[in-house]
Image (cartoon, rainbow, N blue to C red):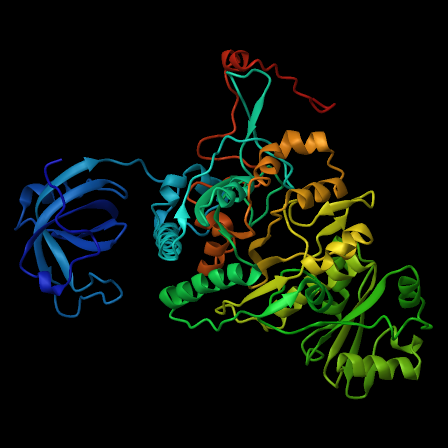
Length: 593
């Protein structure tokens, strides 16, 4: 390569007129306007118009017509002002163009399988197979550059707060943390396996016991779980832990981070402290533990109104231990058609609800297939409780608490979008706190809501002996626009309490020693009170950039089947490799195969 660049393709302005420069980059397109040939040359910084003039450089002009999209070239030439009326003010470099003096072809390109700079309408599989080309496009490239910028800001914030950046192992021990582990066989220890970490949980607690006091890491984590638009098998989290702190210290540290990010990235002032909602309140008012607070449409419990109702659907649901809850869609009577209302029933069947009841508050009175079953007292109490007025629509779900919450939470989000109640430009943060320590598994036994190292609230410790499902914990989730972007808790720092929690979870002493022995040992050597949090960096980037898929903020993502289309991973390995590991495959095939 003889012509090494002096400037990038987004750098030149009118002040550089009459200077000689060298640019390197990719050809975006080629245009022949009679005697002059034009190309747009681009790199990650921008695009500059290049002119091949036979009067200036006849040899270069003679081969310019052979240039095609994505050829890699170097040009040396004179910066000139574009002719009057020909400036392109939509480009940063739009007032200038380069008249080529000499030219070097650095590499040719096959015809790309899609238009790199306009790939939005190309199917995802094609773009993932040729991810290196999709990443050359401005949209994804800008996403990655934005992510790099934000990651740097996060790292600098924690370093400024006297945190220590410490890497933890990738090859570690399998521990139960809520999802399946990715396992890695050990060649030197036949028959044994490492696990890729679902999080650095045990290591960061060990670092607090080790006395580092403030730890953070931009950590790679791995979970073998079903995928969706905001989930990947390998992901990145901002991991932190602090000693000698309580819940408010951790939450305050995160609030400081986001206040700075909002100011530096979006020039917005984030009002602190962020709103805090208890888990119980979030489930009652919004039906989920990660509510979108950009709009209202709060849920109202109407079970007391219909406990003795003549409407069997409501009465029977309450009698079976369930409930009746409603959302008042304010002013929606003129916006929702009968078809809109009827389509809610198949929508909630995804959540195992039997249907959605509704009442339209028309000017001539309530309209509904169910209102005739209500007594006058019930109607009055219902309308007062929900704040129903003319022009509103009430929607109801009657079922078990879980079904009602999931159904109404989904309906709330659906109606928020349909009724235009959501400001898509808003970034709305909140905290959800006071989670239950345990929930019931399929057999009614306790299982951790977060993980088994979460400490109960001190005021609830006595309930561990009487009513474990009433115990709350100092856990906290941070929520952005209805998405949980991070969560953490005060940790157990007392060995006896940790063993007690294991016992309640049905983890025997032998199992606890096998899986968590080093932590249990460490807790006996002066473990300080400590707490931490993990922030999902990929999900934060997705929400900051307003993309629909987490794949848009990860350079080389996996599909929903956890495959890499570009590298064809996972793939079959040689039999000799399996022999070295002492592994014999036993593939279970479908009957049809």
